[in-house]
Structure formats: C-alpha cells, structure tokens
Length: 345
Image (cartoon, rainbow, N blue to C red; front, side):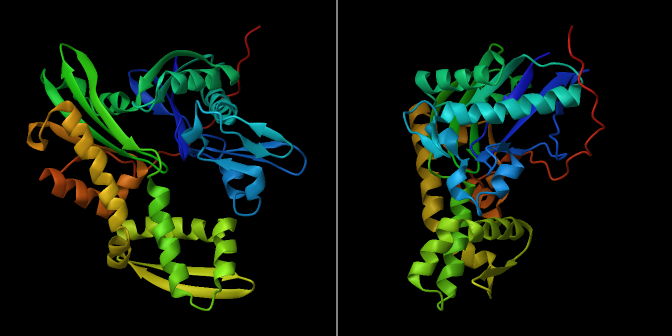
C-alpha cells in the first residue's frame, strides 16, 4: 500500500487508496489538513503542524512556515542554534504525516507517492525526494500536482484528445498547467505560475486595510504588529468569513487596546485588484506556450483552498466565459477511531 502525499506550502495531507476508494488520513487533531509548519519549543522539542503554526505569532524566531518555496535552494532557516535547509524542515512534516498514517491504518508505512509542482526542476525534485527519505519514506514516484488534480477529477475517463487547464491557487503559490489527455496518457503541455502569490497575500490585503483604518496606531507600531503575525491570523479568518458573507468584523487587541473595523467584500475585492492582475499573467503564458485559445479547452479545473474566494471564481469565469469545475471539501467526515500500530517482528 502506497501513501499518497500532497506536500503543500501552507498545508499538507496524506491519503491511501483501499477497498476501491480514496481515504484521507486524519491527523492527531482529527483534521485531514496538517499545516506545513515547524517550531522549536523552549525545551528543545520539535512541534509540527497545528501546534507549530499556533506559535508563529508568539515565537516567530523559532517557527518556520512556507519553506517549500525554498526547496532545492541554498537558503537556510535558523531555528534555535541551527540552520536548516528546506528539505530538512519538509522532512519533519512528512514524518508527521507518516506517523499519522500509521496510527490511522494500524500498520507501518514505508512507500509513498509525493506530488510536486509541475514547474519544479530536477534539483527541486531531488530535494523533495531527499526530504521523504529523511522522513523514512521510499518514494515510488514524484507526481506533478496538476496531473494529480486531473486524475482526482477523473479527466482521464473523458474522451481522447481532451485538453484541460488546472488553476491551482494555494496558500503560498499559484500554478497554472495545461493538461492533454490522449491514448490513456495525461501529459502536461505547459506550466506557468507565481511562487510568491497565494491565499496568504489576500489575507495580507485585509491586514493592510485594517491597519490603514486604525490611524491611531503609529508607523513603528504597525511594523511591530506585522512582524508579530498576530494580526495576520485574524485577517486570514476574516478572508475566510468573506467567502460566505458580505462583511467581516475584525477585532484586534494591541497593548491592551482593542481596535475594530468592519471590512466589506467589495472593499476587499477592490484592494485585491493588483493580485488579480498577477493571476492573469501565468494563465496567458501557459496558454501561449501550449498554443491554445481559451475556447479550445475542454474544462477548467479549480484546485487549492484560495479558490474558495468568490473573487477568484468570478475572475476565472470571466476570463474563460464558462463555469470551472470546482470540487472543494466543505464537509469533512468525522475522524474514525484510530487503530493501534502493528509493528512487524
């Protein structure tokens, strides 16, 4: 049995295919999403996932997030007295997913299929594979993320010579890929993206709108607030609230003073215009590289949590003059009871 892993910039998850269906793995908190975050506590112990992400606002110097962006590079992240490469930090996340899977399945897991962005070069792919090996996993295959998305939507079951565009807007990165299905094979014809654009940037827009409204906060204090990441977490929740509501109420306490501002969806969307422009460029580049026009595409597929935003869905609909396929989980099944881990003798 192979463990399927989506190692994401913001969140990661694992799944298995058994009894003819795909099962998402629940972690120790009963969630299927594990934040891609690592933190070192005062006792020198490592925290991974939700516990690590919760320390980002209180211990930013001891917490690392979004390190997938630096996979395969020489960039180092200092935590405590040591510097870590991105693959070392990613290995901790992968090890956590492996342990959760073993508890969920009641059996040891050694083999995995790991997804990577289509634009990852050979160095980045080797770094991802090395991260999995550090976590105790043998990588059977690295699978391009848009190909995995296409398979999840069953695009391989469509008629031959179908062409699809996968629009993947995650928490920290944006990828656009054009897939072609022919003779039972799914092939990536072109890929483009922006590794510095994601849902987190839209949350930062809300953060800026809030600070702009709070005129009594000095410029120096604003810098401290942004650095602490405490307001960003509130802004992230407001962004999610605006998915289903026209307004989001933001309350934020700083130096024993509570600040309040109501942000409307229209205000948020107007302030996000520059980000929307950045979404268009990779789409145009991917279509140009594939030598296709929008009307030649069989389907447009939305992938990534940030595509929940109405602004994003509306933008895609306007660009392609049709409704995209959108299969986002709004309900997660309850966490089943864990089975004890069976160790082989």
